[in-house]
Amino acid sequence: MHTSTHLLSVVVASLLSGGLLGATQLAPNHTIRFLLDYNQAPLGKTPDDIIPEVGKWKVVKAEGRRVLAQEAQNPDKVFNVALIRRPHARELDLSVKLKAVAGKDDQGGGLIWRAKDKDNYYIARYNPLEDNFRVYKVERGKRTMFKNADIPHTPGWHTLRVTMHGAHIECFYDGKKYLECDDTTFPDTGMIGLWSKADAQSYFDDLSLTRFE
Image (cartoon, rainbow, N blue to C red; front, side, top):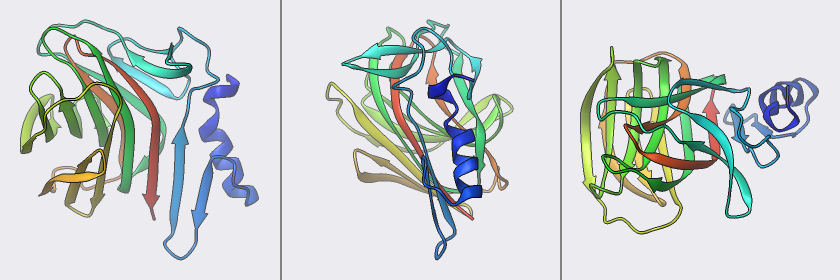
Protein backbone atom coordinates (compact mmCIF):
# COMPACT_ATOMS: atom_id res chain seq x y z
CA MET A 1 0.00 0.00 0.00
CA HIS A 2 1.36 3.41 -0.91
CA THR A 3 2.72 5.61 1.88
CA SER A 4 0.22 8.38 1.21
CA THR A 5 -2.87 6.18 1.09
CA HIS A 6 -2.44 4.01 4.19
CA LEU A 7 -3.78 6.68 6.53
CA LEU A 8 -6.70 4.55 7.67
CA SER A 9 -4.35 1.70 8.63
CA VAL A 10 -2.30 4.22 10.57
CA VAL A 11 -5.51 5.40 12.26
CA VAL A 12 -6.35 1.88 13.39
CA ALA A 13 -2.83 1.30 14.63
CA SER A 14 -2.75 4.62 16.45
CA LEU A 15 -5.97 3.82 18.27
CA LEU A 16 -4.63 0.45 19.35
CA SER A 17 -1.38 1.95 20.54
CA GLY A 18 -2.85 5.10 22.00
CA GLY A 19 -0.99 7.27 19.51
CA LEU A 20 -2.24 10.28 17.58
CA LEU A 21 -1.09 9.58 14.02
CA GLY A 22 -3.95 10.98 11.94
CA ALA A 23 -6.66 10.31 14.53
CA THR A 24 -7.69 11.78 17.84
CA GLN A 25 -9.80 9.83 20.31
CA LEU A 26 -11.63 11.92 22.89
CA ALA A 27 -12.96 9.72 25.67
CA PRO A 28 -15.59 12.10 27.16
CA ASN A 29 -17.53 12.30 23.87
CA HIS A 30 -16.43 8.94 22.45
CA THR A 31 -15.36 10.58 19.22
CA ILE A 32 -12.78 9.54 16.65
CA ARG A 33 -11.43 11.92 14.02
CA PHE A 34 -10.06 10.96 10.61
CA LEU A 35 -8.42 13.07 7.91
CA LEU A 36 -7.71 11.88 4.37
CA ASP A 37 -4.90 13.89 2.77
CA TYR A 38 -3.33 12.80 -0.53
CA ASN A 39 -0.48 15.29 -0.61
CA GLN A 40 2.10 12.47 -0.85
CA ALA A 41 0.03 10.16 -3.11
CA PRO A 42 1.29 9.02 -6.54
CA LEU A 43 0.03 11.31 -9.31
CA GLY A 44 -2.41 9.91 -11.85
CA LYS A 45 -3.57 6.98 -9.71
CA THR A 46 -6.66 6.14 -7.69
CA PRO A 47 -5.71 5.96 -3.99
CA ASP A 48 -5.98 2.55 -2.36
CA ASP A 49 -8.62 3.68 0.11
CA ILE A 50 -10.95 4.89 -2.65
CA ILE A 51 -13.54 2.67 -4.35
CA PRO A 52 -14.14 4.44 -7.71
CA GLU A 53 -17.67 3.14 -8.25
CA VAL A 54 -18.54 5.56 -11.08
CA GLY A 55 -16.35 8.19 -12.73
CA LYS A 56 -12.61 8.72 -13.08
CA TRP A 57 -11.06 9.47 -9.70
CA LYS A 58 -7.32 10.08 -9.41
CA VAL A 59 -4.71 12.20 -7.69
CA VAL A 60 -3.61 15.36 -9.53
CA LYS A 61 -1.44 18.34 -8.67
CA ALA A 62 -3.33 21.58 -8.13
CA GLU A 63 -2.05 24.86 -6.76
CA GLY A 64 1.09 23.32 -5.31
CA ARG A 65 -0.46 20.27 -3.63
CA ARG A 66 -1.93 16.92 -4.55
CA VAL A 67 -5.70 16.56 -4.43
CA LEU A 68 -8.31 14.03 -5.50
CA ALA A 69 -9.93 14.83 -8.84
CA GLN A 70 -13.05 13.57 -10.59
CA GLU A 71 -12.24 13.84 -14.32
CA ALA A 72 -14.93 11.81 -16.11
CA GLN A 73 -17.30 13.58 -18.50
CA ASN A 74 -20.35 11.37 -18.21
CA PRO A 75 -23.91 11.85 -19.56
CA ASP A 76 -26.36 14.05 -17.68
CA LYS A 77 -28.09 11.37 -15.59
CA VAL A 78 -24.90 9.73 -14.29
CA PHE A 79 -23.81 10.17 -10.67
CA ASN A 80 -20.04 9.93 -10.22
CA VAL A 81 -19.42 8.15 -6.93
CA ALA A 82 -16.23 7.42 -4.97
CA LEU A 83 -16.68 5.56 -1.69
CA ILE A 84 -14.10 5.35 1.09
CA ARG A 85 -13.26 1.78 2.14
CA ARG A 86 -12.89 2.66 5.82
CA PRO A 87 -13.95 4.09 8.23
CA HIS A 88 -17.70 3.64 8.24
CA ALA A 89 -19.89 5.93 10.33
CA ARG A 90 -23.43 6.59 11.50
CA GLU A 91 -23.36 9.59 13.84
CA LEU A 92 -20.93 11.98 12.18
CA ASP A 93 -19.51 15.38 11.33
CA LEU A 94 -18.12 15.23 7.78
CA SER A 95 -16.44 17.91 5.67
CA VAL A 96 -14.42 18.40 2.49
CA LYS A 97 -12.85 21.22 0.51
CA LEU A 98 -14.27 21.45 -3.01
CA LYS A 99 -13.24 23.31 -6.14
CA ALA A 100 -15.31 23.23 -9.34
CA VAL A 101 -12.98 22.89 -12.33
CA ALA A 102 -15.11 22.33 -15.44
CA GLY A 103 -18.39 21.03 -16.81
CA LYS A 104 -20.94 22.16 -19.38
CA ASP A 105 -23.97 20.25 -18.09
CA ASP A 106 -23.00 20.16 -14.44
CA GLN A 107 -20.34 21.43 -12.05
CA GLY A 108 -19.36 21.13 -8.43
CA GLY A 109 -19.83 18.12 -6.20
CA GLY A 110 -20.56 16.96 -2.72
CA LEU A 111 -20.36 14.60 0.25
CA ILE A 112 -21.84 11.13 0.61
CA TRP A 113 -22.61 9.48 3.95
CA ARG A 114 -24.39 6.43 5.40
CA ALA A 115 -23.91 4.79 2.00
CA LYS A 116 -24.87 1.15 1.55
CA ASP A 117 -23.47 1.09 -1.99
CA LYS A 118 -23.25 3.32 -5.09
CA ASP A 119 -27.05 3.49 -5.39
CA ASN A 120 -28.10 4.11 -1.77
CA TYR A 121 -26.84 7.04 0.31
CA TYR A 122 -27.35 10.61 1.51
CA ILE A 123 -25.74 13.42 -0.51
CA ALA A 124 -25.19 17.15 0.06
CA ARG A 125 -23.85 18.97 -2.98
CA TYR A 126 -23.13 22.45 -4.33
CA ASN A 127 -23.68 23.31 -8.03
CA PRO A 128 -22.06 26.59 -9.20
CA LEU A 129 -23.94 26.52 -12.51
CA GLU A 130 -27.25 26.59 -10.63
CA ASP A 131 -25.98 28.63 -7.67
CA ASN A 132 -27.55 26.24 -5.20
CA PHE A 133 -26.74 23.95 -2.29
CA ARG A 134 -28.98 20.90 -1.83
CA VAL A 135 -29.37 17.80 0.31
CA TYR A 136 -30.86 14.59 -1.10
CA LYS A 137 -31.20 10.90 -0.56
CA VAL A 138 -30.37 8.50 -3.37
CA GLU A 139 -32.36 5.30 -2.96
CA ARG A 140 -32.05 2.50 -5.51
CA GLY A 141 -30.37 5.01 -7.81
CA LYS A 142 -33.25 7.53 -7.64
CA ARG A 143 -32.47 10.96 -6.20
CA THR A 144 -35.00 12.75 -3.97
CA MET A 145 -34.37 16.31 -2.78
CA PHE A 146 -35.07 17.31 0.82
CA LYS A 147 -33.96 20.96 0.96
CA ASN A 148 -32.49 23.70 -1.27
CA ALA A 149 -30.62 26.94 -0.59
CA ASP A 150 -29.64 29.48 -3.26
CA ILE A 151 -26.02 30.59 -2.84
CA PRO A 152 -24.26 32.74 -5.49
CA HIS A 153 -21.08 31.10 -6.71
CA THR A 154 -17.63 32.58 -6.21
CA PRO A 155 -14.48 31.07 -7.75
CA GLY A 156 -12.01 29.00 -5.78
CA TRP A 157 -12.16 26.49 -2.96
CA HIS A 158 -15.19 26.11 -0.70
CA THR A 159 -15.91 23.90 2.30
CA LEU A 160 -18.92 21.61 2.48
CA ARG A 161 -19.87 20.11 5.83
CA VAL A 162 -22.66 17.84 7.04
CA THR A 163 -23.64 16.51 10.44
CA MET A 164 -26.08 13.71 11.16
CA HIS A 165 -27.29 12.54 14.56
CA GLY A 166 -30.08 9.99 14.55
CA ALA A 167 -32.42 11.16 11.80
CA HIS A 168 -31.39 14.83 11.93
CA ILE A 169 -29.25 16.30 9.12
CA GLU A 170 -27.59 19.73 9.02
CA CYS A 171 -25.59 21.02 6.04
CA PHE A 172 -23.08 23.89 5.97
CA TYR A 173 -21.41 25.86 3.17
CA ASP A 174 -18.25 27.79 4.06
CA GLY A 175 -19.09 27.56 7.75
CA LYS A 176 -22.71 28.73 7.56
CA LYS A 177 -25.67 26.41 8.07
CA TYR A 178 -28.08 26.54 5.13
CA LEU A 179 -29.98 23.24 5.19
CA GLU A 180 -31.69 21.20 7.88
CA CYS A 181 -34.01 18.19 7.65
CA ASP A 182 -34.90 14.80 9.12
CA ASP A 183 -35.01 11.42 7.40
CA THR A 184 -34.98 7.75 8.42
CA THR A 185 -34.31 6.05 5.07
CA PHE A 186 -30.76 5.02 6.02
CA PRO A 187 -30.64 4.52 9.81
CA ASP A 188 -27.53 2.34 9.94
CA THR A 189 -23.78 2.80 9.81
CA GLY A 190 -22.52 3.23 6.25
CA MET A 191 -19.67 4.41 4.06
CA ILE A 192 -18.68 7.99 3.42
CA GLY A 193 -17.64 9.25 0.00
CA LEU A 194 -17.46 11.94 -2.66
CA TRP A 195 -19.82 12.77 -5.50
CA SER A 196 -20.26 14.72 -8.70
CA LYS A 197 -22.78 14.52 -11.52
CA ALA A 198 -22.43 14.01 -15.26
CA ASP A 199 -19.48 16.02 -16.66
CA ALA A 200 -18.72 17.92 -13.44
CA GLN A 201 -14.94 17.83 -13.09
CA SER A 202 -13.94 18.81 -9.58
CA TYR A 203 -11.12 18.80 -7.04
CA PHE A 204 -11.53 17.49 -3.48
CA ASP A 205 -9.15 17.95 -0.56
CA ASP A 206 -8.96 17.40 3.21
CA LEU A 207 -11.85 14.99 3.62
CA SER A 208 -12.41 15.04 7.38
CA LEU A 209 -14.65 12.78 9.47
CA THR A 210 -15.53 12.99 13.13
CA ARG A 211 -17.33 9.80 14.10
CA PHE A 212 -19.36 9.74 17.31
CA GLU A 213 -19.57 6.39 19.07
